[in-house]
Amino acid sequence: MAQVLEFKLPDLGEGLTEAEIVRWLVEVGDVVAIDQPVVEVETAKAMVEVPCPYGGVVTARFGEEGTELPVGAPLITVAVGERPASGDGGDAAVSGEAPAAAGAEGSGNVLVGYGTSEAPARRRRVRRTGPVQGTAPGRTGTAAGGPGSAPAVNGRGAVPAVNGRAAAPAAPQAEDGPVPVISPLVRRLARQNGLDLRELTGSGPDGLILRADVEYALRAAGQGTTAAPAAQPRPGTGRAPATAAAPRGAGPIADAPRPAAPRSSANAAPGEIRTPLKGVRGAVADKLARSRREIPDATCWVDADATELMRARAAMNAAGGPKVSLLALLARICTAALARFPELNSTVDTEAREIVRFDHVHLGFAAQTDRGLVVPVVRDAHARDAESLTAEFARLTEAGRSGALTPADLTGGTFTLNNYGVFGVDGSTPIINHPEAAMLGVGRIVPKPWVHEGELAVRQVVQLSLTFDHRVCDGGVAGGFLRYVADCVEQPAVLLRTL
Image (cartoon, rainbow, N blue to C red; front, top):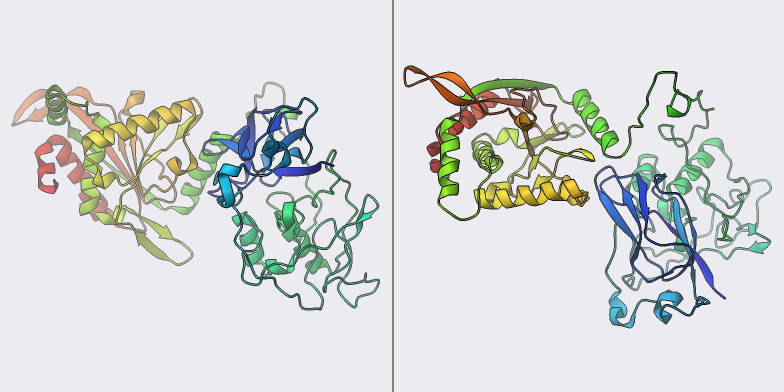
């Protein structure tokens, strides 16, 4: 008889808590192999194809295209252990076993916290008898010795019957093995509330501890109850779902009534057009708002004569070989300036009240795409020459336009270069890309009257602006950085000192 397994939206990393279904890659009734991508989702950072860790026949899909799902929500169910009627598909795909070629090491195709690699052998933990701190959602029973307590199994409350069948007790966890948790949000929630995850029995697949499990245990501890309301099994799974998570923004223990629903696109007033702040647009809004709330920023700017820089670039490209972009030259100037003023290549650890300075430059650059504004990151920009920078800028820009940027491409920056001159504007006061400490803005380069060598002449002029976190440095450092950048723009030979 086939076993129906439920595959839930996994933790996609980088603190992401939700994703939007863009395109289903399988239909109900299709045979899927282990680690075969089944759905394409869009997070606040990138488009991701999600592989399924089970092989078998797809029996159900959850969510239409365009639906936003939280991490831990069911994606599909797969019937494992039964060959489809058509006879298509191999034994390994239907049985849910990894192909023989994968061997004991598994396929290795994983996202964050799950995959098919074989788990290492672990010692079994002997459970001590006594009351537990909380029970998982969907399970009943009270603390040992309490009124109306159910018979204990290995020191835990009895597991209730689901659909008339008594569920088997969960296997004990390893004393020194990993706790079955894949989400850093779940770990943080438990840590902040002093909850020992090893005392919980997860309601997810193979005992996986979900956020709902932690929230239920905290509510039970706060209210002095451990009984959970009866849960109905999900269609096609035969398994009761975990208790619904608390509303976003609410504490894990409080069960206060929800306020009246705010006005939304569903009940917009006449003449209003409402667009949900989600996906890339929502992520940008959250980051910019956080930057304004937390960072005491200041801006300084200067006009610079970029005529010699433009001539130097033309000479470099006329010499043959790969073309060098203007953005790459500006990036090379930035990395040289950060070597002289490292205070701006840093971040502020607000909890520790410390300034964290980096010895590497991961340079972000603002790029406008059809999906919105993204900031890809060039790793180790300080160690690249102009040709390498040009190639990496081109690769990341194309990936951004096609939606192929990964979360790793969009995180970890230490300083950002923003060339808003491509929009035909001269100046701006950029908002710092949190949690960085500074951003250099570059306006358009246009012919303007300029005093050159004591005479009025028409020169190629650009406005440079620097927005910086006033906690990491004072105006002297910021002014010195910006003046050095302007000097390199006006006289590119200044860079020869650092080559």
